[in-house]
Length: 129
Image (spheres, rainbow, N blue to C red):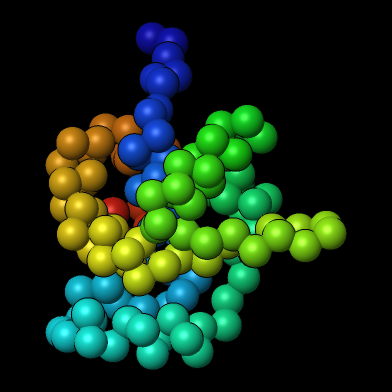
């Protein structure tokens, strides 16, 4: 039976990107009192996720990557620092709290799409719950 590619909507791509950013940040989003700690964590954060990293993570084209990043930025879930040659993408406090709250929802609603997306490299820690 031939495998068919299913269309993935911006919500699942947003989930992938936000979890990628949390992973790069190196924090446990389920730790106690995160709301009290997150401002300090973000203030001293030293990580770099580029547009190319995001494109690779969501395995999509330039146009879809731009659309997802724009939507996340408009929603206040990420910030994008642009310079002459690159984009540095960083998660915001709102983005961290959003993905912490909605990961279970995404895992339940998009279980098959998440499993399919990570089928060759294995599910990341956030998707193994």
